[in-house]
Length: 349
Ligand code: FNR
Image (cartoon, rainbow, N blue to C red; front, side):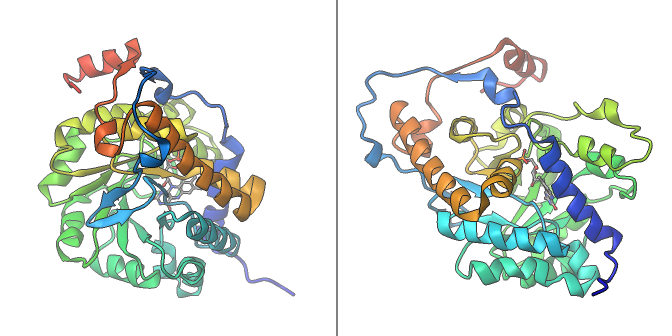
């Protein structure tokens, strides 16, 4: 059988998965290593008494972590989305799709995203589009997956390095219009370059209330897009951006008014607990879950992620933190580099 030729966009989706996995390193160091908890020998708490649930936009999530935006848009990534949806369903995790803009331009690709709802009829699903799309695209993306919320990604660094990327970044007004008119909650997220206090303030000024700072430390879209370029011209930009820990520092002053989510470089349950300690309401994971899925399949990945939930509960018990609010005052120390970042940016915790 002769297969119809894939579009450039579908091919790009396959390349992103391939390259994310190619560059994935299980033991990669990142800024989460610069934060240490102070061990407490007498927490006066039972593991079973620790509540790891969190609130997002009026909904209770039993798990404080979720599968963040990854994929869809090609036949190969449809299979991955079906498997990720199974993982989400078994492990009780919210799950975001990858960017759905391709399927709005090419309706033959709709099922590569809607398959997520098929495999997880009752789960919390987040639709995903890029900034620069208007309200009608946002509405179609939500309808396509019968989503409970929408992620809008802001990704200038990726677009700049992507050979066929966008070159105009007038995004803020349209984001505000979507937030004001869409009938599900909206999260504005980065894609692994982190956010600054200035960015968060701009988002707040147009009515955004949920932000995923998605920082540096894990999947690196400068490296991925640079690999897709013939000239490999942007290698020198591979350290661009703020880490997830630094981005959470940047968000401190906003945490009473906004829901701050964190992602980028999460490797294990301890990283999740650290991000929650720094004020994240919930923690997104992409590269690590994609890696587990490719290496072990959906059943083992789901089991592993259920074990992560139990491990988060155990770590919180050791820290004497009965719930996520209590965790936010667990004693910790920071590396000189992280202290330096706080000083230079005139931030305090
Ligand atoms: C992503 N990410 C992403 N984000 C988004 O908002 N829309 C998208 O379409 C994609 N596509 C995508 C593909 C692949 C293969 C990966 C691994 C990731 C970015 C993702 O949601 C997250 O922000 C970053 O990957 C940082 O988190 P990790 O991977 O370090 O946990």
